Length: 266
Image (cartoon, rainbow, N blue to C red; front, side, top):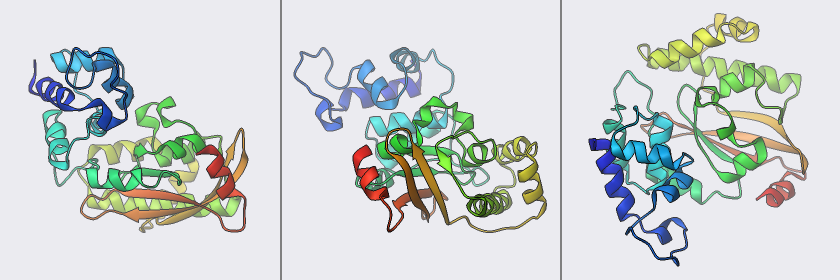
């Protein structure tokens, strides 16, 4: 058993099912969570959990580590330790992707609002249930495609509708924000890989050539849901201290039926 596997087993054994919203009526052979329960909470397979614990799996992704940390209710220090065991030790030249447990607690209290957390290169790291209900479950896309720039420029979410003006502003703002990120993390290979991928898109290439630098802090868009129809939303991007994460909070546009529709989906 690897150090990572041993840590996961200890954390799983200590996690009380009731603490994570699971009924504890049936007889249990283990004190804490079953492997299948942890797998369900983290959105991975029980077989993968077993391989991780037994040291038979490859290095898990940062997204999987974050999902396991949420499922196990790890503290900030424990989640950082998990990331280090998986080879994701924080480094000044790499983009942070660790979401503090304090931020998870804040998001848990925003269940009536779609919320998502992105890193500085706009990879989607975490989202709440209402975000998935409005825009579709992000787990249906490959992890490398869960990036706001890829979704936008490669038209990967049919539920998002923008006017020409909204789209032009949103894309210009995202690209300028990425340009600023590339200056802060010049040695991060993920930044270079994203720019290389996006360079095949004509709209991105033209905006990137402008060399504009700015922070992306707001946007307007309409989600088109198959059951409740159009949901006009205002997106506010909240910066987090010391982590360079972006918390996107989507609020119903005033004087529309968006609030009622979000309540129905919630």
